[in-house]
Length: 172
Image (tube, rainbow, N blue to C red; front, side):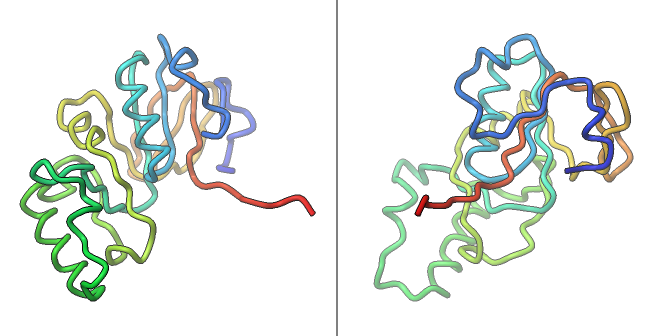
């Protein structure tokens, strides 16, 4: 939890509670995270909400589903050593995506495949068009519906969706 989150006047849900776009309609929405769920919900909010924002603590490798019309997973071969897979993907991403900073995103602080990559073709396009607005990590909830980010900027939100991971467990 972030400082001041308990006093937030809007709603805070976890992405596992998200069931469909009805909850987004007419709202200013902040999605926290950079994984697949966060990107999918951010894009859906870009379609249905009054405004869609995404807050990421660090950079992520956001990869398109298709590269030159071929599914990304089909471009990587199992016989390729990891170093060559990483080199190949970095080159392909440089050509097809470019610099993440151009989208307002941070540069990943890890090598490809050291963490689960984010596969999403729509997020980068929505960021480019301004349908999703990027923010750095949350610093605090400052009262009412206002969220302040670590860069000092702030915005009011009706709904915050936390897409920061899952704890999987099996009942014994």
